[in-house]
View: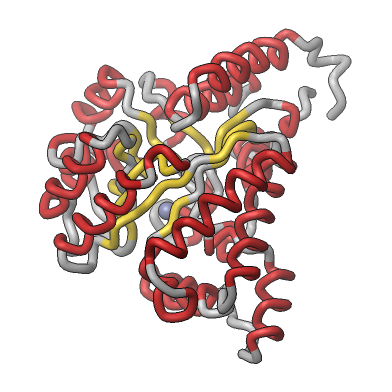
Length: 332
Ligand SMILES: [Zn+2]
């Protein structure tokens, strides 16, 4: 059996703060003099979002933010990622860490250094919050574009999809696209196919974070495959938030069979449990995906990432080598 940690891949759907190591959360809470936030046991998106905010509250210093960034990059490297593209809504750190521009510069600086230390490529996805005024999204898009040369590679749309459709954020995404960023909004998770259509038509999506409920509309699945839009899929997150009842019921195999590009991701490992590598293992063990399927997913993740072309070409060749390895001889 081929070793999945050795399969080169990109981690494209991972919320920076939601990827904090549990031990780091406990240590930073102690340093900040706050109780360790409870981060498991939610049943609804609202309860989940509250826990996310609680986890953010332990980031009270530049050093703690740098530690988080370094560990997220280290964990991606350990899972066999050659590229990691964490996502964040910068203003959530305003109160504890200062102005947006400063917080962003710290994250970008640490991403570069951590990438060098751990031997992988890094980029940042700047997100807007869909529950706020679209004018704030425009401000985030402008912030993101100003730092496109320093490591911001993509623009997203976070928070509860329910009641907050994509269309009002078209202006922000126009600015991001004009600035050369990839469009990677959340859609098709808590809302159905209409939100995926909105992400495509109003936001020019290159990637859709989740997007899995597109499966409810066969014509939309055909359209996603034809347009080569990548769905940044997170199976454990979907099951734990009740989008699908179990891993066995997850539509990822159907989407792959229909020719839709999909990447595999952990979303918020602090809150959901499994990390990037565990998601690949889960899909092999419980979804029945073959090494050929998993290699195709890894290739899609690399191709759809914000990584430089040279890194993409090297990683794609490395996937060929992984597939060529004699499966009998490879370490389990
Ligand atoms: Zn997400």
